[in-house]
Length: 208
Image (cartoon, rainbow, N blue to C red; front, side, top):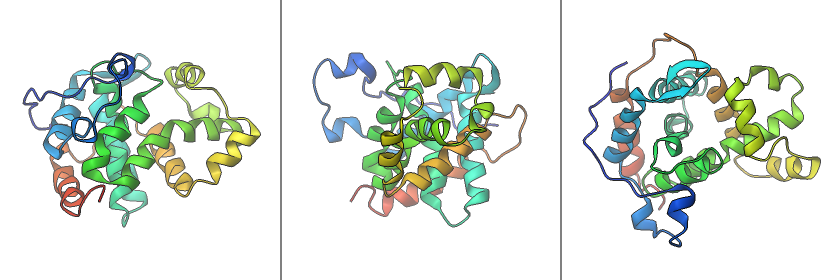
């Protein structure tokens, strides 16, 4: 699955090291569409995890394509699927912070709804582990390990609080596509297909 060549874009430091110097300004934190695409393209050379034979880019494209197919009218949900894991591609990114890092980076250009869904996709995993008896069986070994670092299954109070959030159902849909978008050799649209979608969201006003 070919994508545009990365242009050596400079992205802000994130993760625990990036936070040591205090809050990052909204302008400094937000990536543009070209920067997001360049960052995603670097994922072609990054394995998703040791037990899954796909790249970070493959996973992003598969997740977005699954959501586009299942929810054809929801452009923002598909965009969230594409960018949900870019926190792993940022300098200093960690499992614990990758969802919030990614949400921060895309909020300015892709808008609040996309950013919120991205920011909640780890919480959605914790919710599903707590409430869906069969869900644990779909998790890869790496996801099971990261679950412990991310807080484990929600307790009853946390699950109720999560479910009360306006975008909880969307975050769960994103999470389920995230878990399914790890298929070796699956043919999906390439990265260039998604450029008009992200540009359209940006031109509509992003976080405005």
